[in-house]
Length: 407
Image (tube, rainbow, N blue to C red; front, top):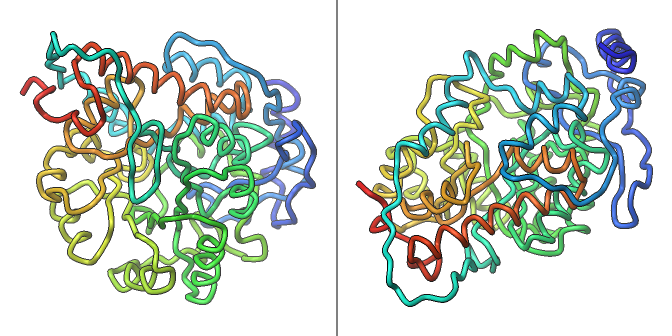
């Protein structure tokens, strides 16, 4: 272990109080720099480390164009530049990590049925989702670890997503504030929330999101208790970064400031407080998807949290067709988990998704090139989607359906 990483782990183990965020340091004209992301779930019984640990963390800072052949190459490359504890937090999952592996593996059990001689000369990937006009049906999924990947944190991922004309979903436990993120992301954006237990605090952050221009609220429902993130325990890792949106709040990710007994009244509370469309993230059964529609949700995000919460649940793509059948066009369907190819995106759209959310690859691209790296991840996937549509014979996103899947 190199000296910097050894010092960082020593600092985090000794720290017992949460301090103010690290002062900003310019890394690029349009960027701000090192600040915070949320502590991981296993920190529930431990105070968050202090600012000296954050300063010792040593996230990458370079902003540059990146070159790669496919998205799977990004992970080992990012491992070389992200500090060991942070990389373990980003890359790992719960328990035996079976669900994480199944998320990717499930795509290879479904094949594409191309339709040739269509006469098409182009493939239009533009789409509209809940009023947001997008050049591609891709979204940056809400994640809490951006400062672990790069000094610019969410400002880098948001700027890169916006530059690729995809949709950005900001996390309530982001490093940077939702207002700072909105400033660098003028395009379409949603706000994900871990609902604070205190209704006043919840109403305040929801009001801020609406005022900052976020057009939908995504409520994550599968984190009511911390999961068994064993890699973090082996690494003795706790995030040194506090949450940008709750700097004065004693709790954080995995602590009691987050509501632990979510129910449908909380969904109604978000509806009434914001008047914005509400989506539920963490939907993996048709029955729950139907309940979400019946309770007025505008959409569901088919997700198992990247395998990071409950292991041994189905891959998200595996359950997508049944959920799409159950929803039957009454709500928007977003999916995340294991998407690594444009063909994966195409299959998701063919089996009922309206929007495909990308997680870890965005953080790996961010680590390797800042906002330019994140942008390239989306552009690469969009290029592969265009290729797949051309070869499969689909001219528009709306045209992609189950007729392109070999069932």
